[in-house]
Image 1 (tube, rainbow, N blue to C red):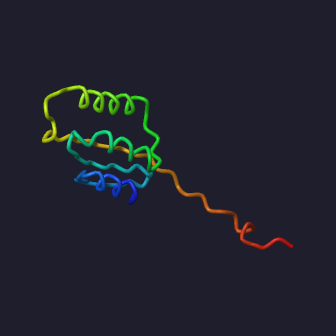
Image 2: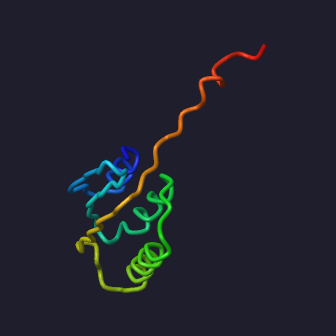
Length: 101
């Protein structure tokens, strides 16, 4: 999750809150200037998030509308409440650390 937070910040976004549950659900509330939507969308994919089909559609629509509308939206702020289900990192079996005979 550190890489996700860093990626959002590197695109000019602001992480407003983060929380995690015992079940591995992480909630991140962040904002960014609308003109940065393509960069934000790209870094979410680059850090390895698997977005739902609906999330892909909403991000695509936001990016296309931002690009097509001639009015300057540079000061408009987009707010995203992202829920990420994490899974534990599986550890290698102890046998794998032994050198071959």
